[in-house]
Amino acid sequence: WMKHTHIPEVIATEKFTGFKMLKLLTVVEDNEGVNYAIQYYCQNLEDYEDYIARFAPALREKTFLKFGDQVLAFRTLLEEV
Image (tube, rainbow, N blue to C red; front, top):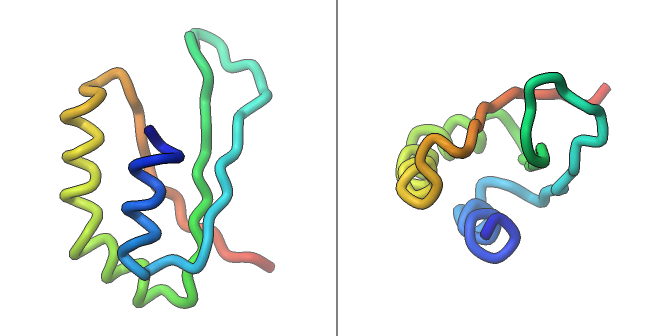
C-alpha cells in the first residue's frame, strides 16, 4: 500500500523531489512487526509547509481509515549537512 498508493499520492502533490523507503534493522524492545521510514526530499521549507497545510491532513486521514491505530506515524525534519 505504501509503495503503490500512499507514496505515489505524496509525490503527486509536487511538493517533494524524491523519496527513499527504508526498513529499520535495529531490534526495538516491545515492538511486534516491522518498522519502516520514508524519507521525502523537498527543495525548500516552503514546499514542506505547503504540503503540511494543504495535503497532509487528507492523506493522514486516508491512512487512518485504512489501518486505524495499527500504524504509528510521525514526522521529523532533517537537513543534510
